[in-house]
Image (cartoon, rainbow, N blue to C red; front, top):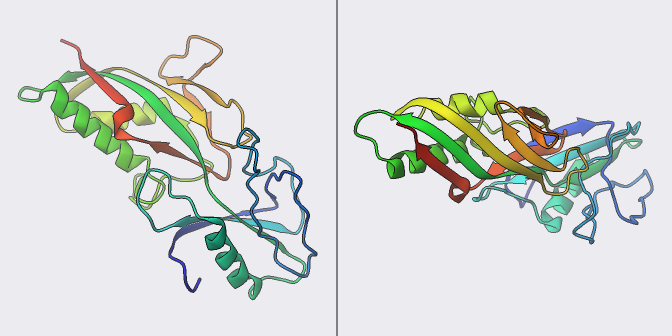
Amino acid sequence: TPGVNVAKAVTVPLRSPLTSGATLTPVTAPICGDTVPTDSTSPAGLASFEAPGVVSVIVIPDEDGPEPTPKPSFRRAVCDHLDGHRLVTTEIYVIPPQYCRLCDVEVDVTSKSGFTRAMLQEAVAAHLERYLHVLTGGADGDGFGFGRQLLAPDLIAQIFTVEGIAAVRGFQCHFIRTKSDASPRQGTLRMCPDGDDEFSSLNLAPEETVSIIPSAVALSIVL
């Protein structure tokens, strides 16, 4: 798209965004206005039902930070560009990504000789931030995927690969969805759930990925 730096784009067919009192444009023009409700408590993201003739495109700008999010003008530029390439009967929505935020991350580890708690906490936090980033994360470094499963065992396995970690003795973190309409909206992710609000895995919505900041990680060394 000329004039904007799109780092990543993901298409979701047959799904339209949740809107708050939005007026649909005629099908002869692209539909790509600001689809985020003005009420910050309202859900955003994509509707759960199929919408024939609709394609939603998630765009992520090439920018720093744990949650790269396109501005309305950015999405408008992409939509105007796509208008020249779509079928006349296709409705196109250009939408921002939704983030499932991980916070209050608690990790208990056994360390190898020569590694302090401060060293390991910094290393684990940096590794999780890198692995979960929408642009540079994932196993191949091309971004943590949309609509995938977020697994507590997978995060534990990632922590175990950090230099200086001999064993991972405990792990849990709190998650909260930004505006996605997916359920559950919040809870605790841990290896062995023991409550209605605890889970060992979480299914992300098609428009949803994960974010974390290093300061959210607290690490303890178990002797």
